[in-house]
Length: 494
Image 1 (cartoon, one colour):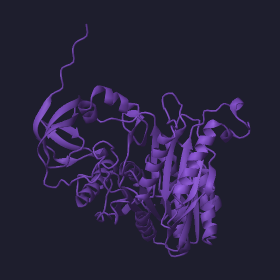
Image 2 (cartoon, rainbow, N blue to C red; image 1 turned 135 degrees about the vertical axis):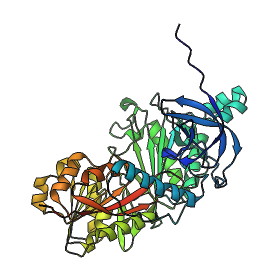
Image 3 (cartoon, rainbow, N blue to C red; image 1 turned 180 degrees about the horizontal axis):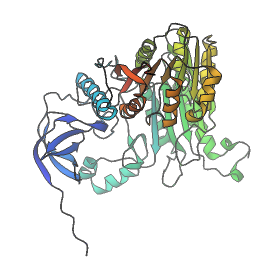
Image 4 (cartoon, rainbow, N blue to C red; image 1 turned 180 degrees about the vertical axis):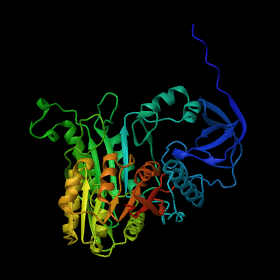
């Protein structure tokens, strides 16, 4: 027989001291760090350790002895279960302090380069209804909280588990959905649309997707809006009809499931005339991503428009656009100011996406060259230049490390300024080395992950000094933070 594992300890009367990564907080017990979710500095709690390693523990609260004086009352009924806004119990001013500290700690601890005094973080003007996009999963099994399971009669809890839902995925329960009644992150019309879709589907007994079995008609709902007042809704279906059961084999939407899907779409179109782009698709893959899917128009256009200063940006169903529209404008103004453009510069915009930054700075530059992996995003970038009468941009699609080469730079000219906004993983080492050989005068580095940004700053330190650090909060009530760094070429010692 194997040895029994020692029971994990209960820690009593523990004071939470700091915020940590991923929205958790931490305490220190006997020189060991303890990570605890759903707490704030100043809380005094009893903890049940759930995981113990040599240098740290993970625990959960089993009793609150004293609430912190800085604690705020969460405004969302789903707080504590949803996981999307883990810092709702912190006043926004405290959130900003924590994010500023997070950037400071990561750039110093990981980057280990000389840094200037940081600028104060730019907070978001809106802390509710600030998002322009939300994605809701549909599942034939709803997620039940531990409290629901404990308090409901067994038969009732089992029945609820098999009840369909539209809402958010829960970490650790990939095939279940937490039903959302009201989300505060987007204009309230999105709640009305989502709840109406759910009510209609239940009334008409539409099947909801089963992620394990890969069956069920209603799979996913994406809702977007824009500063122009337009709304886009994308409904993702999973048609079950086999080709031989279809009336018209060339049209998969002519079968039973297709007719049910179109009836739902007609209901949405009739009930919500505000929707100017109602789109749909049949996704037979194992995941919900739509970048490689054919998306069809049921009503209106295949796009909406975003507005920024005097620019219009076309946003399609596959387009990336910063999800906090107002704060994106503040972020891009920071980038433009730090680029210090006079109208004579050649600018490279790496990881350009749909060319939002490239087009935003183009009128202050001689030429802007954007590079992006996704071909559809590059198509959007080109259209956005045409739409705004901008004729000094060039866009190229492909893997950054394969496109941005010495030969590419020789062909298009050495950049005076590089703007880079990579994904969370940061820049590939080959890209960093190409930048070092290109020797632009300035680099403006936008990052959604200060940890990987710090790593890249260390690699760039051989030729560049950090001149400015500007954190920007794009996502209130979450631990995520954007950070903009401006680097300046060091004098050549040779």
